[in-house]
Image (cartoon, rainbow, N blue to C red):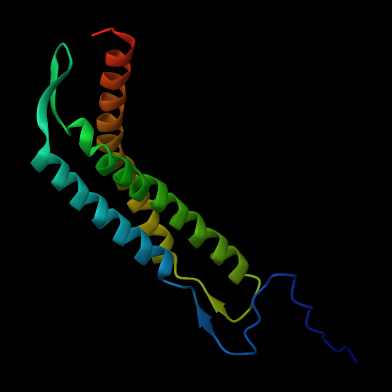
Length: 145
């Protein structure tokens, strides 16, 4: 007669005690909220921005130097926080797969990947603003303007 023994859970693996549990939606909620906040910050930046010649052939609306906190916050919300949420989701999914009662939700990972791509595009706007402000500040302080 063969008896089956259940394997002991690995260290750090969640223990479900026999009931089914689903992957947490919190990483997706955090990523959606941070993307929304970043979009609002971009709108605020566009409202207070002034047209600046970034290169000889390109004129963009750039925030004034005293509002540099807006693009920095925007960059922290997207893409930094969205990528952190993507990693959080991936780690929790990997840890959950150690438990036979865990139910992964592939929609979360898919939505987070799309949000990560969108956040990189949104992050470009924030980076351009930060780079221009830093360029102007360094040019003025070194007497290059």
